[in-house]
Image (cartoon, rainbow, N blue to C red; front, top):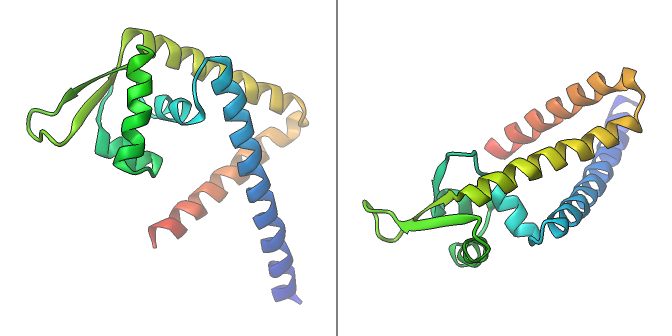
Length: 150
């Protein structure tokens, strides 16, 4: 009996996470479009801290992208004035990418808009369920990270 229940719960969780991912991608796409970004550019900008300089290999790893695909994304962000890049002096095959002042301002706007979207989402959920929801999602994320680390 217990094994059947675990199987049903796993099936529900699998469907929920798949649907949640799809819905989150739609949310990101809508937000990115509002700021004249592609979804990939939006995700790339969300990876930066305000003063952080990141090399292209780190960004590609964080975004799970090939170097060539990342180059096209960075090219778009440079063209829009949101990032700056320079050849890494210790390894000429790498680029160091930094947010421009305009990019840092945009990231701040994106962060604010992103939080506001989630605030709206929470308004559709009973207040008493906010903390349990965050607790459950934190546990799910931890379990996913453990699974990925195997």
